[in-house]
Length: 397
Image (cartoon, rainbow, N blue to C red):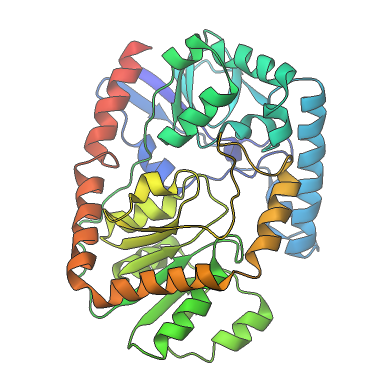
């Protein structure tokens, strides 16, 4: 019986330089190891000081503590880039035969594989590093390392972006797209009425403002509802909380999130922030249609007019080669925030019309729902497809 250790940096955090957390979909992945393998999970908890910084403890307001956290993280990332060193973790084990790493290069004593949403994860999301020939050469050397057996981008978009910045036949040979998987609910509740759903840990960047603007307009014409999960700026909340067709939620347990999926019809996810969007896959597993924007891998997941509607974004956050528009993480975040606070009318009209289409066209709504369920139970986002792929990958190692 071979043992696989699942390496998630949030289990260790020996420094202040990661915001990774274990998503429920990652937890599910750890339970789906092929026959002949056993998964090892860390018993270590996250560093309490770092977790305090991220969550606003230690007497600091959350906003201030997050700024402190990112100042330290950016300084660390930039210092590594100056040395042409991709971010890498030291991890040695006597218990495992191989390691599955969540988006992190490792210096380890056993063979390992890693997954990734975007190659900028190897340089603290600083695009200028990927644009540097010297840094890209160092990254290529790390990715060509024989101890790193397989590279598993979570989308074809991520795979092609990696190839755009790292020119190496050896890297191409060891790279294969493996989509994240979702655990389908045992039973999907029959939808009653039309309920839209928005989920986002950040408001403007995930499309919270335009979702509220468009739904508020729709609610004056149709008897529909919106479940809105995530933080909302005070002034905006005061304005839209008067609309009794909007249900606002902030911090809720994951069981409540699953309940919201069960009670909703369509996920509205016009995010200019994401390279993937796990919430889209979760929505599919509950039979929700998805309205999103043409940004990085989102159209690859949704496929316009197949499992939902993909609209033109109000601005671009990614270059044609898949790189970030902003040269640094901070500049990229500032760019997205500034451009998300005043969505243009043409874009709002497009989102409004897409939401209205979901309301009025029951046959289209049902088509999207059935396609979403099928893809998560039998298709590329299913447990069956994942196990088939990952079994062959482990055997090849």
